[in-house]
Amino acid sequence: MSKTFKKVISVTTSATTILWLSGIAALAPLAAMAATINEGDTIRVANTFDVYIAKYVGAKKFKRLILSPSVFNSYGHLSWSAIKTVTQAEMDAFTTSTLVRAVGDPKVYSLVPTPNSDSGSKQWVNMTAEAFTAAGYDWDSVYEINTVDRDTYTAGADITGGTSASPSTSPSTSTAAGAVTVALASDTPAAGVAVAKAARVPFTKIALTAGASDVSITAITAQRTGLAADAALSSVALIDNATNLQVGLNQTLNASHQVVVRETITIPANTTKYYTLAANMPAVSGTSYAGQVASLALVAVETIATVSGTLPITGNGQTINESLSIGTFSGTAGSLNVSTTTKAVGTTNFNFSGLKLTAGSVEDVTIYSIRFNQSGSAAASDLANVVVSDGTTKYATTVSSDGKYYTASFGTAGLLIGKGLSKEFTVNGDVVGGSARTIKFDIYRATDIVVKGTARLPLVPVLCALTRARPGPRPPTLPKARRELSWARLILWFRAKRLM
Image (cartoon, rainbow, N blue to C red; front, side, top):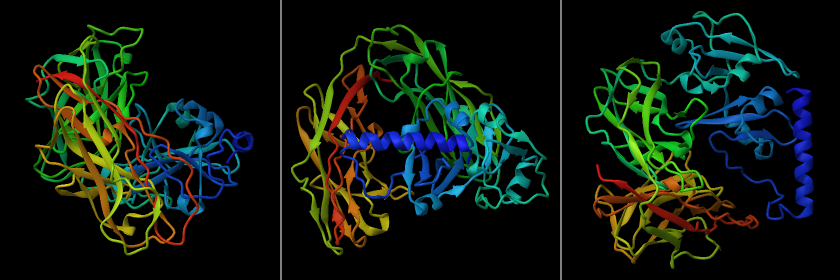
């Protein structure tokens, strides 16, 4: 860590302390607590000045050192005030990666920082994909960086096939390279309209077909094309057509009119999977985009497999409409949402949270899935038999690899809520461990509920956005397993898109 980085961190820490004393951050707990570390978070251990950026690939967790303040500042989305302080144990749970690839540069480098300085060297990992894997490197640990970051390091000797992997990277668990064919799906959305404020408006449906072996795709790059401004699209999302769930997070267009969805997708051997490039539309503002025609193109597929198919693959253009009216949909805490309480380990069939969803007066709506975020300190192993119930049927949940997200799917037919009516959902299960820990289920992102209106031709309203209430300060730790009930007040707008 450089001395200049230490100065910046020190100044930031001092400023934060002043804010706490002045009462601006009065709700912030002063006691050390388990931090929630998300994809892309910058983290450091208390009283140290090394700052890392976190990365998740499935169950794998990586961290990469940010060399200097100038490198940090070269990433416009990073903020000094957003650096999270974590425990040493939490930091150690992330494997340090030194492998990077600059945007637009196919070369993978191993970075070697010089201790106590703003400098370091980079070594090109100059070997075939097979040799890379055989040497013990992990493709999932490779970070995509900007050219400023890459060029801060001076060039060192290449690493060739005879060189072993750095001990700071995990042995590779990647599948064999294989081959994948990329094509435009025959039922890609037809040319239509993209309504202001709409979410997940489908633009381009792509088909990914694996050959004789499984194929792992680590990133997909999409680009906005057509006669439209980048600002006409609020963000871009990748949708798995098999589950109707979003892959990764919403991504905003960069200066190259592109987004990169960096999530690992596995295509089983001799199988075709379909994904849709979709856009979330901004609200009508002082700048009008009405009449502009935007398209989304698949321009790159990141994989060690052999890729067949002609890129870019571009879907039909969608004309932006800012005049169509929309319906409404809302949510509140349900009547079965109990106040904060203490429960002993061994409690069974307990309601952790309650959520009431109400359709507006315009039309019936159908809910396809709900994903709850367990933001307490309890681990997935502390809970068992977690289900989501609508009062009639209990739906099993699938748990994310990090143990923090529980998803209940309601099948292809979904659950219907009549216009003007409500339906209450509860999350319940067994407490099997976690003495002195907390359990708290809520809705974290807009994409955590998949819901649409019934077909009022020619428009289908679709979920647009969700606002999550900020939780208050955590209560003191109790000697028994504790369940903090909080509910996220939902403001869900339905938006329209033309039937395809």
